[in-house]
Amino acid sequence: MSRNPIATRHVFPALTAALMLAFCAGFTLQAAAQIEQLPYQLRYHSGQTIQPIFQGWSRNDDGSFDMHFGYLNRNYIEELNVPIGADNFIDMAGLDQIQRQPTYFHPRSNRDIFTVTVPADFGDREIVWSLNTQGKSLQAIGWLQSEWEIDEYGGREPDAETLANQPPEITVSTASSVTLLAALRLTAMVTDDGLPKPEPEPTEEERRQKEAAVLRPTQARPPMLTPPEDALEIPVNVPQLTLSVRGNRISARPPSGKLTVSYMVWRGPGNITTDPQFAEVENNSATTYISFSKPGEYELQVRAYDGGKSSYEFVTVNVRK
Image 1: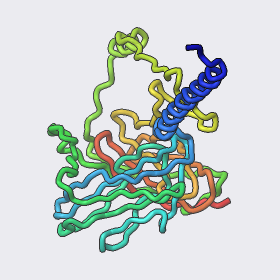
Image 2: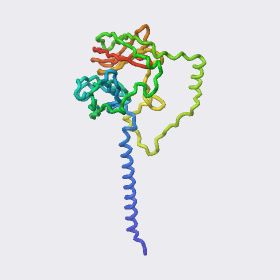
Image 3: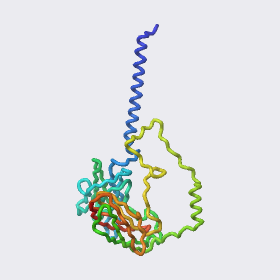
């Protein structure tokens, strides 16, 4: 039986079109699945939400409890100011509505930022912190679930020095206002028990060995990951921030073995620049010069850190134009 050439000409284009349609549909579904996951794979400079986080609770000697909260700012660059109100509110479960949460949110993960103290008879009630950013309302819900009790020492057995260490005591003297273009001079008075004792300075030989280990690493370079050929191209309007080998934001740390004072914006319209970033305490005092990015009223959190424990104070500053 002979084939009909006209029928053949119609069958093959139709079959080809059907296969192409199936291929495109499959590719579209795969691409859609990748796009759905894309926001969790990219590092965004700005435009992302802030997730409040309940990090657990701890016991106080008087029988009350401290509920510990932090947050994740999903932006790698953008810092958000969310004033106290409907967009930044803590439901205190019938207790006094004291709103002590921050209103200025620094990038990325900020752990154990503040605590809410609840009475011994708090029971199964809940503390709810709600944050509305980028049009999305997110919550952190804290209650006294036994698995979430925090151990001060992270499950480690503390030594005698760690147990004896007491947090430093701090007071801050400051002017009540400053002009925007001027640097504010802040002096903190700090006393401490001298614990933990600083580790001895390394010898010259130990320094040379450490430098040699850095110059001649014994561990091979970690593998470099490359995206597959069919991976979606990163949009040009979402630049990535890479500040370390692994692409993580590098956070400054206080110098080891030093009693230091540092400042951060707790509430206010903008951020600050401090000089030095960590002021070392000498003769029970530490001085820092602070510049402000915008005029307005600021509340600064002051931290005194002895290498093991911290103390905090708050300073209000009015920045004029």
